[in-house]
Length: 64
Image 1 (spheres, rainbow, N blue to C red):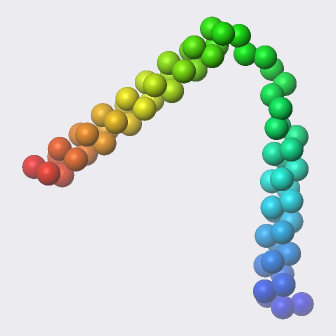
Image 2: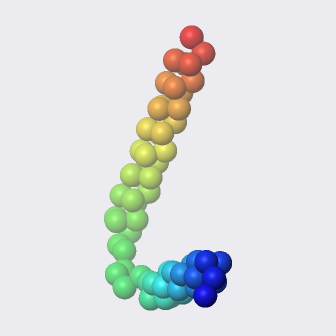
């Protein structure tokens, strides 16, 4: 068995494991209420704002 075949086999096995996991969790088992959806949306917006501020601060420090 060559190295190329061994690596290809290992990658193929890992890809199959990831596909099986993705298939298992493709549909959510829990139902989210509207309040949870709004809370997650607020958290996502907050995270984007924090990342934006971090990027702004980085560029202002680099440019000065």
